[in-house]
Image (tube, rainbow, N blue to C red; front, side, top):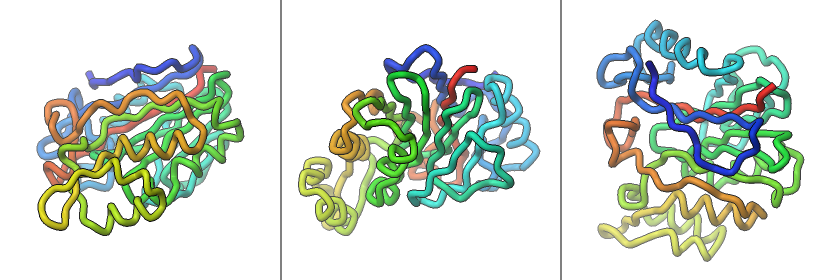
Length: 243
């Protein structure tokens, strides 16, 4: 049986969310074992079987996305043909499942305090810098102060080495982002993607922010990590409104 983590956040009772872990699936190494990504070289039949196991815990098939580290946001309320190219999805209808896949990038789940709308966003550093979180909130059509966010498993601040150009880009957009970078090797910095996301969310008006205390790289028993392993599986962060 697949392993899940239930987000710990003050979401309304009708908001349901799941974070998949790497255990309990049928994929062999290096995708072992609950890999949900169909673009990482795993046997397609294994991915189908893993997704079928996931589906048993959901009210409907998730809206899977072709993630490109951008800011496009897909609507999950309507039935779509194919897989939309987007890095976030939102839904206001019951039983519509938003999902993003990650293996180091930051998944962010959103809902409003009234339980009328949910969203999931894939925020690698490129998407975070480009504004994927803000773009997602715009599509939710509720005041930012009424939103809450949960930060799912991502690469931790002690593991996320980036170059000068990444730090410079964030600091150019917001000088306070400098607090999220610690000097490393020459020309390198250790980046706190959780801290960067919290800055963005707070500046956008979100005050209820939960999660952000996990590290995919340093916990190989539970999490896939592209930075650690290269070829590996993908986890899913999912959210929906109960009917």
